[in-house]
Image (spheres, rainbow, N blue to C red):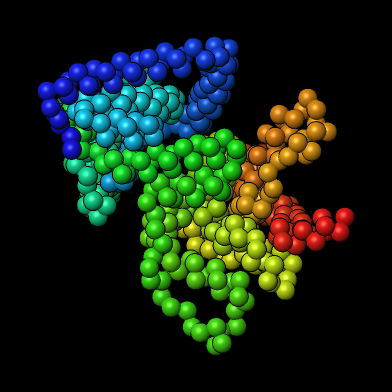
Length: 535
């Protein structure tokens, strides 16, 4: 139990702090300083590229002076909605033992030792609050750069207010998550709190007003347009959340912390080996996703339905998806549609964001294909080649992706008007096929071995980079019609024919992937053994 456990609790906490300092010093002895310098150099290069892109986007999107009042009324609730989504995600994470990720040794030994848990966990909670504020400030400063170019005004003023507002929101989100884990809030209660926060912000966006505290905190970010001193009252959210977090952090569940520490380690290891499907699987477990005990509805008997066994098995699995996964797919599709609108109206390179979103959605939709790869012995009993079975799984994944693709097309039509309906539907079709193909590459591709990279010699690093970026390139190719339409519009040529021509050539990418899957589909291990024995 949290709290003091006796007269020696203070001494024990001091001993734990001393052991942590000693462990930190030992780790620093083995740190390669040049590797740290190289990472800082790469971080600065990436930050410079992102800053240049954001500056270009702000220079393209200009808000007229007469519309800046409406921008303030809509901008504050929209920023508040973004903050509400972040806090809602943090509260849901708190219901599963987050957002702290402790080392397994700390969970198994320190948290179960006769010491005051609050004194042990407060340093980690303080660092988490600082990281949340730092990430929020970084995002806010980047948004301030874009806003200063789009709306006008002092760039320093925009960076100051947007960075401060986002930093407070980041600290509030982490604090809310820590409070949720400290009081051990249930998942249903967390879902109710998250729904209330997001719903209140959505009502503010629909009404163009500022009533929720998060909308008021969002209004601080747009202070250069119209300052209102009352908005600063919302700045008290962050200190209140931090104080509550540091007070209740001792109630953290040891079981939830142990599970989270193990899964977080698996996620890091999978990411280091570029096993992105394993990252998605462990991420679902980390998020507490569980399949439904009962499907959403029952399929008719197989004797009365002319459906192949592969598709029927995929349908059975999809009907047991939890609601969170369905909503995530729809959200990814809608976000991809909004990114396409931003790419058309602001900067063409934003289609890469849509490609990443489509690829992530396709990994969820390709669960049947992934399960087939995870159990290769089942293919030994199927009187069909592995490629034939994999193609049926790909077909079902593409069918599932149609729903989020149509949701994204609807978002694009709502934002940009009915004039982009044909372009939206065309892009939705190519995006579905290319995203499904990209997910198939990620799932079916064998890990790179020494023999695959030996001919590259000094170019082995570049070969690995190209190999790992191939699925993202294929997924992004599905959104190329938006880019071609925009470039043709800027060049004074008819945009729609250019988009349709691009869609025709884009179809070559999924066609090539289909041919690769059909001819080089992963062969079960049981089928490989006779060949190796005969050789």
